[in-house]
Image 1 (tube, helix red, strand yellow):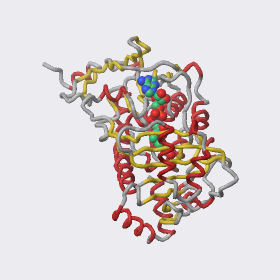
Image 2 (cartoon, helix red, strand yellow; image 1 turned 90 degrees about the horizontal axis):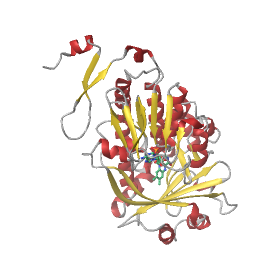
Image 3 (tube, helix red, strand yellow; image 1 turned 30 degrees about the vertical axis):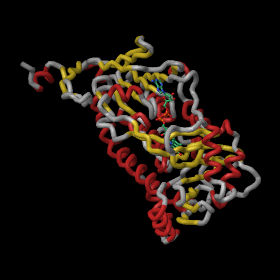
Image 4 (spheres, rainbow, N blue to C red; image 1 turned 90 degrees about the vertical axis):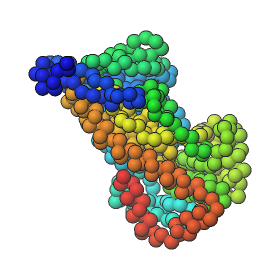
Amino acid sequence: MAASAKARRRAGLVGGTRPWYDGRRSRTIVVNRDRRARWMSVMRVVVVGAGLGGVAAAVGLHRQGHEVTLYERGAELREAGTAVVVMPNGVRALDALGLSDHVRGQTMPAVSGGLRDWRGRPLLVTDVAQAQQTVGPSVAVSRAELHRALRAPLPAQSVRTATPVHWLGPGRTEVTVIGDGRLLTKADAVIVADGIGSTIRGRLFPRHPGLRRVGRLDLRGMLPRPASPDVTGLLAGIMIDRRTGAMFGLFPVGGDHLYWFTDSALHGAPPEADEARRDVLSLMADWHPSVPALIEATSPTDIYVDAIACLAEPLPSFAIGRVALLGDAAHAMTPDLGQGASQAFEDAAAVTRHLAGAGPADVEQRLLRYDAERRPRTSRLMAASSRQAWLMSRTGATAWLRDAALRAVPRRLATRQLASMWRV
Ligand SMILES: Cc1cc2nc3c(=O)[nH]c(=O)nc-3n(C[C@H](O)[C@H](O)[C@H](O)COP(=O)(O)OP(=O)(O)OC[C@H]3O[C@@H](n4cnc5c(N)ncnc54)[C@H](O)[C@@H]3O)c2cc1C
């Protein structure tokens, strides 16, 4: 007969069910309560994946005094591709991690952002400077430079590149970390940050439907800011085309670069990069002249193409025993609210806070608290991003009505709405 919970506690054992989501009833795992370990606050923590989220978490946990090892499958630590917009909540999360110096130096200039039609005529005008005064700065920064700044505090000996992690074996008191069929290490806690295509997520949640393609193709480019055309009036704004449902966004990166992105319908398989660029140029040939001019002026090697996908539904948990998920591995969402990286930074700050002072014996409880804090918020944002994608990609009568409604919103109200969106 199973021992009662009281008896187990007296014997120094803690029993409990874990949300091991394989469609069957959760199994019971008995955790040895090692009194010595309870008082130790240094744990062996493994972080899988050195994207923006994984690096931020690794630095946060390292600064808490944990013994962190960061495994990255890529041959080197780097972040590829253009720029990223970090929203005020993302900047605050970086503040909490002591990692905001780089972004704080580059806040968005005082421009009027908002939504415009494909010719650049205003639909919903906002005052970005005013919104930032209310909720704090947002910033568009080079991904490569942000990654470099975030990873700088990490000691070289904590990082293992060219080392993919394929499986995590949850044990009674530790997790075995396995890559290429061999044991890499054992850890007290593992943070899974291996991105939207996470293989570990698929193994931890075999019944979860995984990713859903949303039928949109995004191109992103970054280029030195040209002397002409003068694009000041289009900065920090998004142009939408009710005829095709396509979108173009433009942001300043520092004083001397521009970051642009397009979003348009994708029917069938994603095209090669060259073909995608040609298609989007033809789709936007009669837009505001700055749009095709900027795409033309961007070196094809600096254009990145993504078929947009998101998690088909939220995960049932971000924490399974001693393992927690973070960033796109946990809650991949469409990029329409520009929240993916900011949410990864919030995750990193939260997991760092929840594991502060934790020892091997209480890590599971701490990670459950991390899950309770992060999952409801990111699930709401996943749904809100999908709604925004739907609304912005409308064509025909719905789009005409949308544009008419947007034009009717006064600037002050639009700015207040922008600020409240950034307050999320
Ligand atoms: C077109 C587009 C535009 C976007 N724009 C914005 C924006 O403006 N603002 C914003 O906030 N977000 C934006 N996002 C989303 C944002 O880029 C992501 O949410 C964010 O980069 C996720 O970071 P991550 O660390 O979770 O994952 P990733 O950056 O994907 O990092 C995962 C890392 O794990 C590594 N890895 C994978 N598998 C393994 C393994 N088995 N073992 C070891 N390592 C592994 C990978 O090599 C990679 O380095 C955009 C996304 C897209 C597609």
